[in-house]
Length: 412
Image (cartoon, rainbow, N blue to C red):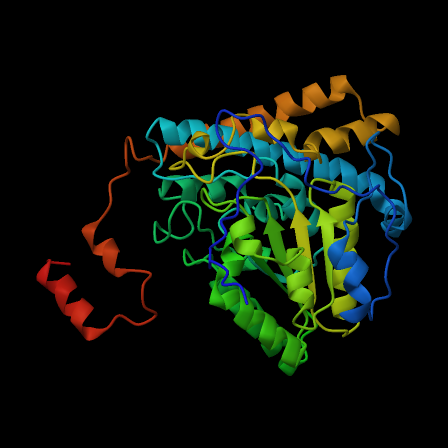
């Protein structure tokens, strides 16, 4: 018998700063290979979908395969809206990163490179459905036509902020737009979504919940607790994992472990799961539509891994050059979601480079004008005057006696 030395393993990213980006270890199957499964798909039958990758747009920008046909006849309208949604989100990101660097707001998180996931998904939801998002899903609000004045108001915490400065700038809350209040504690929204879906099922409400989590936060206990509850009680909830390859400076391999995919991990709980090209707008829209139909027919929860890439820094407080190569997002083998949809629409005669340039300019101007109007109400550079008594408001439905006494002691 030979004594073997016990050793630890350390997952390593494809490349480090100063090295060339290397995504050669990622297997990218051809578009159109996977069919559309029946709505009553079970965990056992979902194995090829959890280990594969659902793609609609091929490398030449053509929509191919069964999932392309699943979207039906309204695809043209969907694509036009989707392209503008993604352009609007990218313009917001750029403007707000500049504003943060100017000291006008304290904190910001970009969605760059991931726009297709939220924008395409939200366009398949219906009024009353509830997203339980993370702090990188402003795309859901943009695609739900959330007023930009309110969004920017919260970024600046001025009098246009619907939350009156009670949240961090990126932790939105918009119940009327299907956007549950974001918690800064990662993973909590997964359990909340399952509980909300269970309550809806008990009340007979046919609305569905959609849970969102990043690849890094799947290492949290809330992720596993939610999967267990979903597996046991079978509520109408779509369990989304946005695998953008990075937590805050930590490569996705740390959270994946030895699992083949995050979809496979969810499948291990007995939940049918699919893995989707998250940079393919049409693939995201098709799978979101399928998942919602499954919920409406009462076939229980489904897990979806959106395979994408975080092009931007984790947040305005992060410097990705410390842990990954510069401009590695440009080497991502699944490309840029905006460019891919644009290429497809041009090939179908629905768009052109000239119209794209015009749309970019128009949307940037729209976003810029809204931003300027909102900034006139105050930023961190020139904050609006506030009443000290306001610190006691919007915390409790009924103010406790000890706070009432403190307010009176302050003379209010």
